[in-house]
Length: 188
Ligand code: AMP
Image (cartoon, rainbow, N blue to C red; front, side, top):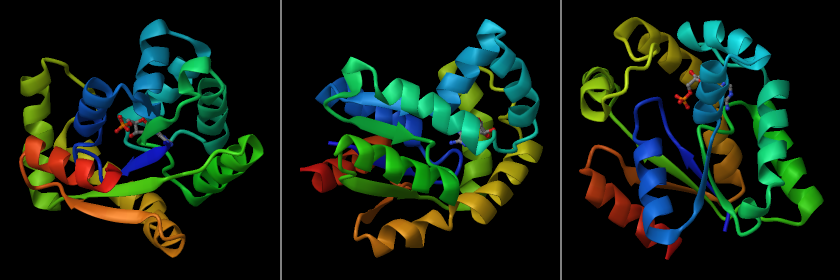
């Protein structure tokens, strides 16, 4: 089963993906985590991506698609994956379609975690405290930019997947367990 967890920055995609990994043994592919790993490792890609991520912009579609293709062809992804933070543009969604078709794989569900944007600011500010990890893009100014980028480049994917009959929504303002239950109800 291949699914996309969709939603604005801070909606809880990573939290819910981790839950699915723990409870169902699914494999999570987070492009944000892959990029942060490249930044930590100090690779050429990491050095280039860091400045883009710090200002809340999107890394180029070519780089992202290259990373995803390489990762999806790993043996552990053969049973399906949770895509977290990808696709984020129409070009990435088209690239994903081509990639899946070429492998005869299907996309089973696109789950939108819906949130109230005002609440996201409080949540992002708490994230560092809750996880003990400090992300340089977790501040109000960068979040504003990331939300603008979300509306401009990523939200147009909602009708794209709705037209394909794949889109389902869950209430991201509910507690983590309740959101998880709603996702379980969709996945069966
Ligand atoms: P995330 O952890 O998903 O919020 O991603 C953190 C940052 O990594 C984003 O703000 C972007 O700069 C970059 N990024 C992650 N995924 C993508 C993607 N699919 N396309 C472009 N940029 C991405």
